[in-house]
Length: 187
Image (cartoon, rainbow, N blue to C red):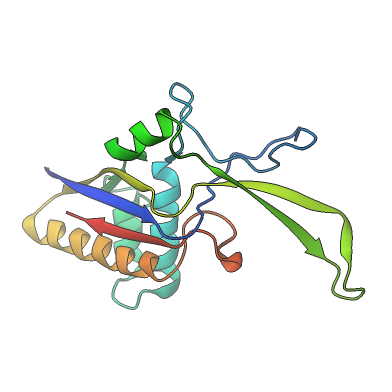
């Protein structure tokens, strides 16, 4: 088996929310926090979020790859090892410093749900969502495991299409409200 590491960068274009949810929002606090590294308390993008989004986009929008190719790449083929391994994606060194020194921080976006019939705010519908602001850059890696040169090329093509699809979609939650536009690049 051959292994190849690809570098990935993700630039946030519109506020990004990949959340953890909370059972007990604090009064006046954040209802929907973003996921953060438990040691550094800095935001990151879980590899599972990126893997799930890539897979979902390929399954619903790709006409280039069969279901079995996608399943083999993402790990549903019982007779073959998963081809694509997604690592967690962390802040680039520059943004890690900027978050750590406080020169940049997450934003709290307040939203309200409107009752379409009455045109007024729905009861209890005020929420505050934490987002990673635009321009922030994350970097990490994806590992491709291949059985042959042809297998490697197929998986590279699959990943490149997934990147193109994601660059025309959104990552994380609330994409229909403008969240999560990103610019993804592989090297």
